[in-house]
Image (cartoon, rainbow, N blue to C red; front, side, top):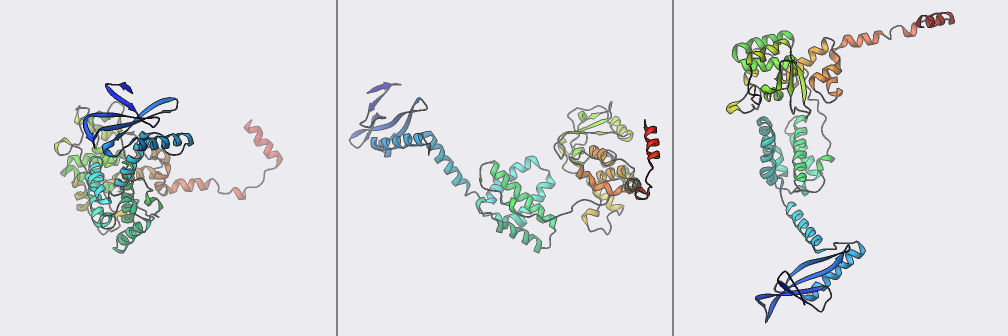
Length: 408
């Protein structure tokens, strides 16, 4: 008999197994007993509780469990402590419960609430529409483990047969991939993201059209008379190459008039960058004066960050007829066309692609290479270097020596 922590423990006929009696509760005619095992692991003594006799535990069962723990410790196979056993059981139960969470349940309870804190209103609207029309009818009632390659192909086929574009198919696959990855990140699903095995359609979504200088002047003229904010934001994109999202997040603290720099924090590619001001842009900021460093330059309702560029921009575009008769979205003028125009104008005027890449904040030169066709004169000059090489007459030894002497 041993005593510790004000509790009396009794040895049992089985080595390493002991019990204590409940002060009042009975199990049958005897007092209820609580069993514990004691053993050595990694040179240290461990004591682990098993449970009450009233819950089905006996000294003999405890001895069998202790023997299994010792065998696992000796062979390295299985759980060698009760704590490890309980962790395995808990994990198995969690995985079983997670396997029953459906795509729809996760979308509504986990994915969208998180997306509402991270994404713009336009993106949320698009994803909700995508879920309602395409994702929910196919994936909604399915646990993640049942979303198969066949189901993914059904999604692609359904969107295509409905006459939607390859871009729509790509978007649906991309959002599905995001949802499954988020479920994996939260431990709801532990299997493979099946979207990895799906072939995405090839989509050329790059905008082909940009504003001519005369179109830009006409647009700015209309905006200057209807919406000062839209006029300023359009100038910032045309003259500095800023995205709408970057402009909407600008604060007074991001403007450095002394150095003529604009700081973009957390832009699209995640890398903060600087943009250089033109004199016109500098005058715009000088006119605003000093403000709260954390205050937005172009706040929306309630002082919050706007979700999109002013709608007066698109109204001015339609008023000027820039999009009349153009059905291909790549040929239509939108606010992002201002940034596209900024880059196109630079390349047309001989600015090298690497410099344009840095000004745009592109992560790779490949992203900027789309503008290379706008510099045909540079290509002609490069090819002119080769002109006549094959027609050159071989130099005599005397000519080669004379050329070498001139170099020396």
